Image 1: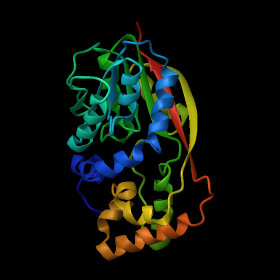
Image 2: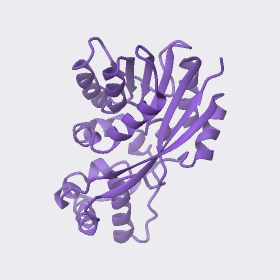
Image 3: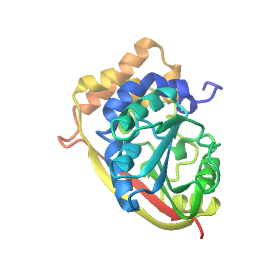
Image 4: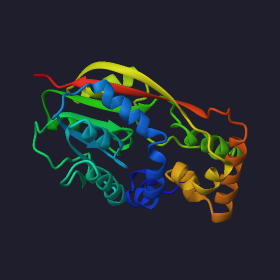
Length: 269
């Protein structure tokens, strides 16, 4: 295994896949972001922070509903895309390059802080939860979405199967050390950050099954974070993508069902 930090913790990795990620984001994660936004039921004008905004799916939902929202991400490429999307709805700088483990905002700055498939991937996820809590006003909401399946969702599950078939002697690592992928684990993370858990909602959508070419062209997007990927040469990566494409041929017409846990917690008054 390589000793350097995994790609999932490297802004350059996310910069390199940002365009393709944005093209796919609303097909999959965008629906979960919209569901999380609706579950929070915030009033118009609420001050909202989106931590690890990615292509800005939650940020866009918030702005469209009249929130005073800003998104942050450690990837400049993602921030550029999120800002361009936000600018179509609201003027001003709405997306910023920032480390979610050390937010550059004063305490008690926001009515709600969201992280949609973001904070749980941080090298120090506890610091991410704590920072969300710090910037919340008293009685503010923290809303965090995580994948229930430890292997991720949608295409990530298929690429994990492909890796297991091609490299049966090589363990396929999970994407993050702390998954928070049960209501109990998610609630415990909130409590550790001095937030009061209120609810964990299961939200399930089906990732539409694309043509086989998608798996050939987007292997890095779906699995480039993995140490296994970094060990492969170009020929092996091609074989890996072909194996995933072959597996995709057996998918049901509706695609891959994926469940997210959307946890909601509140800061004490």
